[in-house]
Image (cartoon, rainbow, N blue to C red; front, top):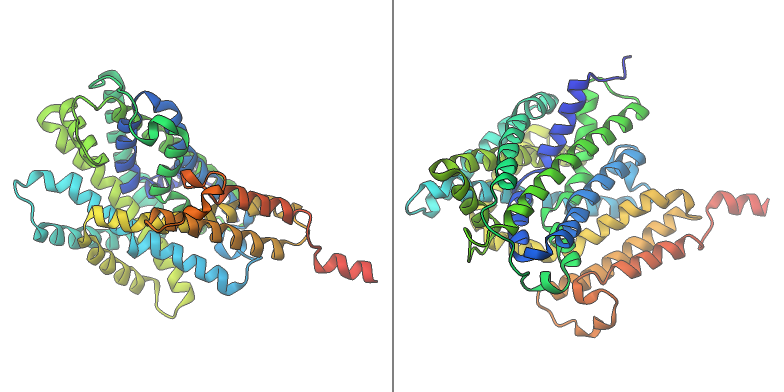
Length: 436
């Protein structure tokens, strides 16, 4: 069987992955971060790129190296623990936070500005229509590459290129002094801001979606699947880096035209209108609608695919269930949804990072099963402390932990656990040979 893809199909797979990633959080967080960072743009942007581009890229590669599925990635964890982590991640990127956020951002930035007085009914009607369209596209998994990679994403990318060129050619202001944490610790602040994109969670699951799409194209051998999955990851990472750098620069030069803006959506909206005049909102609406729609399609499809494998409910029924749930949750409102999601991200992001790190060092571990259990538990325990702090609980007792003050108290304990596991325990085969 032919285990190769045409160049156009390889690019389409990469574009599809890029489109899955480029959604609500990718658009609304960089502009505000750039504005707050101001003259500290470079370190803040570097920190953001580490978590919003570097980690998803490494995670996709980890999925490919592990074998292309969640089961391969978590084979050294107890099955129930692996399933629990997967379910929690899918709930976060699915109906609880990330997917509804795509609809909310699309409404706030692409639709609401056209109404003099927007009401709740406008949001309700739009969210129903938005997720109905997303469900239609997600209905047939086999056509995802052709629909998203070859049609929707190129249109989105053209819009982003137009915006990026305009930002660099005609910046709307000068950089100002950094504000808040961006003045004292821009690198770590940008790093933590990258959590909000949720792309590391998404990449754990999108990797499997890409594998499924490749199989629909006739790619079934492990080596070929790994190669094309990594190719797609680099194409998506390059696209994301291009978008983030332009949006960060947009934010850093937005103080004049978007003074007092309290969210990235407002920064972007006011900046684009200053750049393109009365047609600016139309340009922005097209970009945001396409970006949010492609991500919603990917999230609904990925979640439906996984839940159909662990339940008796079919993929298409899950598409309807999750699409309806997303439309319902979207009516909570953007600010409330973001505030609810932050502690959850602080609790689970380190676990995902630890899992990816273990994938790359697994061959050096004397006892992988023991190592995975210990490291995941350590990362979760210290991540919960960081999450408690973000949620407003008094955890000042842990201020002695290195990096705890910047929300990264989990880093050194998790790293130490991985190093220790490199020297502790021997697998059953080694013990058997020694006894014999």
